[in-house]
Amino acid sequence: MQFKKTKTFTNLARSFAGESQAGMRYQLIAKLATAEEYAVLADTIRTVAKNETYHAKTFYNTLIQKAGNSENIDLNAGYPFRFGTLVENLGFAADDERAEFEEVYPAFAREAREEGFEDVAALFERVAGVEKEHNILFTFLRDALKDGALYKRDKPTLWICSECGYRATTKEAWKVCPLCSAKQGFVEIPLPFDN
Ligand SMILES: [Fe+2]
Ligand SMILES: [Fe+2]
Image 1 (tube, rainbow, N blue to C red):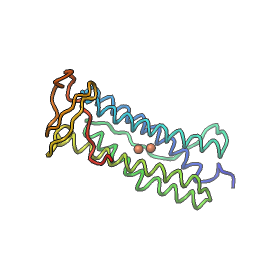
Image 2: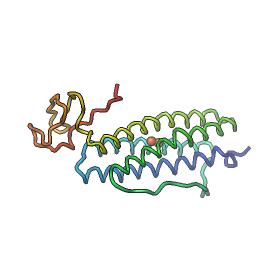
Image 3: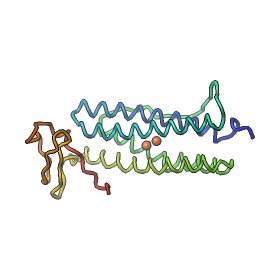
Image 4: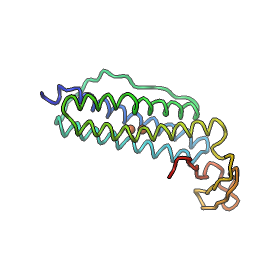
């Protein structure tokens, strides 16, 4: 069968569109985080935005490699359009990542396998693995920000200023860095699942 007639062709195009939009949405959320003086949180979100851009790039390249160029690809697909507070946006992002790794990419991988494109199935599965980590990250950040726990923990925790490197182990990070006067939003966010 001609590749352009397969479900995998459309699924790659949809994935490119979805990842491109996710990358853009996360940049908008990062901008809001910066405006609210959460500099390190903004950087963290921007890193995820970059990941999505590379997913989009890989899907785009794969599609063109397999199908050649296309003038225009019609897609019948839905995409989320939501924006709220920083906490809400992190929740939306967590939900979108969950849908990707639990539903969308497993279904696309299954269809690619059925159509005999094992390499594309494996690509969808590799991306799904990253989206799962993104879901864990966004869920943690949403909960921490909502509960006022981004810079406050139950146990003594190592806090490091991302600007000057000042560090101290306390339950709560400083409001203003005692060394360089950078605000709390510049303190590195310790992630409980880092290893
Ligand atoms: Fe992605
Ligand atoms: Fe993601």
